[in-house]
Image 1 (cartoon, one colour):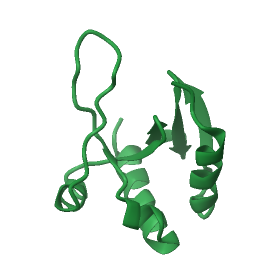
Image 2 (cartoon, one colour):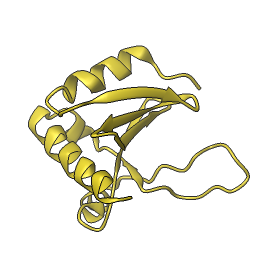
Image 3 (cartoon, helix red, strand yellow):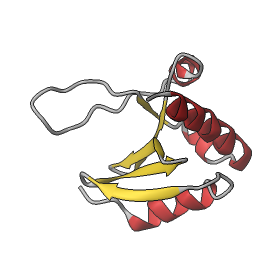
Amino acid sequence: MAVDQGYLDYVTEKLEGLEDLTVKKMFGGAGLFSGGKMFALIYGGTLYFKIGESNEEDYVKKGSQPFIPPFGKRRMKMPYYVVPADILDDTDKILEWAERSVKIALARK
C-alpha cells in the first residue's frame, strides 16, 4: 500500500513547527523523524505516534489503537498508536503530542 502524497503533505504541514522534521518512505508507508529518530509513521492513510509510559494512557483513553504491521509472519503490536482525529485537527495539540513522541524516541537507544 503506497502512501497517499496528499495525506503525507497534510501531516507534514501540520508538523512544520517541529525541528529537523524529515520523512522517509519505507515498507509502503512513511517514517517521520526528528533529531534522527523515528517518532511517527504513516501507513494506510493513518498517522501513528510513538508511545511510552508517559503518553500511552492518553491514547488509550481516546480509544486509539496500536499499529500492527500487516506483513511478516508474526503480527505484533508496535509502540505506535493512531493519532486521534481531534488531535490531528488541532494544530497546537498535534504539535504537543508530536513533541512528546519525539522525546520518547530520542530517549530510546
